[in-house]
View (cartoon, one colour):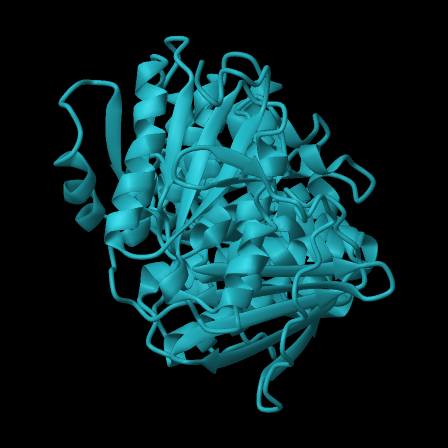
Length: 268
Length: 326
């Protein structure tokens, strides 16, 4: 079950409702690792308050009964239908002059037992929504329900991770509006599975993937191999890394993979 | 028939100990003339100042080419791939006769064993290559006799200025590199496992920045260290220890683990484009100014990486552009 919470009609002062220590900003796609159902509930209240003050309300996908002035969005047709409804709601609200944020409880949109690729596909959909509409999107995971490996694998497709466990992802791969994706940070062996999962997901959505790499530090040998294998395993796809630094370009040239006709290009 | 074309396959690798410029020119020219008379292609890899001394005595034709070795950098670990690249340019059926007048800057005792090792590895690397020959002139007045002897044992043949002879005590292997001196007690130390790789990279980047390394060289060192640490995690028992210190203005990073590396050519050969994997230590050799690898059963593996202070900020870019890193 989903609900949309309308903004508070006046612009009076809003009290920060709970102990939540992070705040959302427009265009962000945040992974929130909540410690318990109580922490989630308190955080949700805080987010509602923040959204009321700073955005055009909060669209909530969490299965809880809607409170106050709310609109239900059915989820019985699965995550695709729910995500489509959310996207339509956001666009409609924007046409009405509001910019609601989105809170998605991932246990409701999918299942902790679902394949990581499925979770990443949903995440990338939500990431695109954030990038396309400049709305804030929070994906909440109740930490006890999810395997740490899954949480680690989905973290890099978010702008940032907040909550109970620290994020150790060395890189970020996420959509940045109509102009492709960004790849940031350092892609090393420790995040190889997350990188491969994110890359596969991005290629499914954007087969001729353009990665903006202004904030990319380095890609290690194992990650280059993973990229080459991922592209080769998906005929018709390609990856173009743009605005790379000299170290990334030098490593790509040294790898020699470009001489094997792989559909990966690396540009300054 | 030329020296190399007499061999069905592999490298005829000969040292040429000489004393003084006159002997260098005379003996090297004799080698070159033998090659030219057999229709071979001659590639002279030498510092630019040597070119004039030889060029003035050679007839102008397209059989002799000069290579500037400046871009080879300071790492002896790039010698094998450099010759891989250089001889690959000749695909017209001509046998290549090379002159390997390459001197890597010495760090004293810290790297003499590694420079010899690079020479010795040429024999291994080209054992099954199409026949070619390589003359390695070495100035006997610039090195102690023991060093010349040790270097000679890394060559199967010696050139006497007119003909080649076998080296009686040629080192067939395995090569026993000198032990590495212990790091200073003040070295920064960090143990690592899989989840610590970002911490390892951050520590190296901070160390590099504190010691004034430019951003690009910092990234290169960080990538190199990350590759070696990854090898520890994958093949060296799941983790290792990193030590960081400075020595003679160079930045030194050593990574230790319990694994054993058995392939002496690891990271030395340019990988085939179609072969997946096997690029970690290759990157390391291309990005560092010296890579000292010591590995033995019961002793584990130590990989010591050196980055020299920045004297040429465009070095790596130029080397890659010249194809040396590919």
